[in-house]
Length: 450
Image (tube, rainbow, N blue to C red):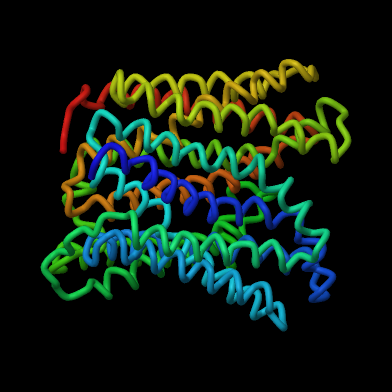
């Protein structure tokens, strides 16, 4: 692909991932209206998020693997079409059950957009420009969380279905652009699809998601033994063990054993998990602002602006630094900044300035953990035939970290009243991130691969 055509392809990938990311951030303002429309309580309404997380996590590795087998372009177009179809189902849903089915369909499509987009970068961009491209894609999530509530509030004036109908013209334009601008990659020689591996991994991730979502964090470690939690987590472990056995025998495994046999890829997974833990903890920041700073609930939500702004600015910057310095120093700096920011939030002492600065430091650190550096390393250490699957595995590690992080921070925060519990949880998390900096010593220095 010529250098002149790279901006068009990058725009195509950026908008596709942004469409999916916005749909997570934009739903929050619509929840009260959805509750009124279908006469459901807050516990039921939470399934609008839970169903999306569950099906997104389950679909990601399969969609990523399909892109390795069928080619990037047809799978990217399939993901866009599924996301658009799910958006339409949600918008016209006659019942809450149908709405949840639409969210599930959306999640399946969204599950492939980020890993496939990252694999396309590895296939088409030269090594010296991959970091910049991945950084632009990584900035999507910060931008989505900045624009999501604002766009949601604007579209709600016309009715909550418009939050989903807006996806249809965007998806149509993306389908046309993908057909015209995305290079057609040659699929691998057809082999039997690993349905057993896909089913076992999907079942394990579904059991893990449901188990962690039912944790009563106020009970601490005892919550794991609850009959509604413990069996699901046990099933997840058993299915993962069976999955490992099946993958060693599969002709074309969903996750090839050689991926996780690589120490470099295992370290990348660890750092993605750490980033997911931190992302989940940020959900508690508005509560901390109310408890420690005396903010109103309305004002507290704006206390996240330093964080998301820093991610939006830091992700492209991290990508450029990766191109110049390599991934290892950027990841080490990201982990260090994240730990320092968490320590700052845990000792903020009731000052607005301290809170804002610490949140921004966390955002700058996170931009190195959710943006270009980790995906750049995967492109270096995964074979071209495994690039899609490797990006999917990275997404699964990050999502699992987010699931575990919500439960961990909630359990620690429940051990003390008010701001003290949340601050204690952030300090514990900061210590974990600081310890993980040592893991960067195991990363190889800068290398070049095609």
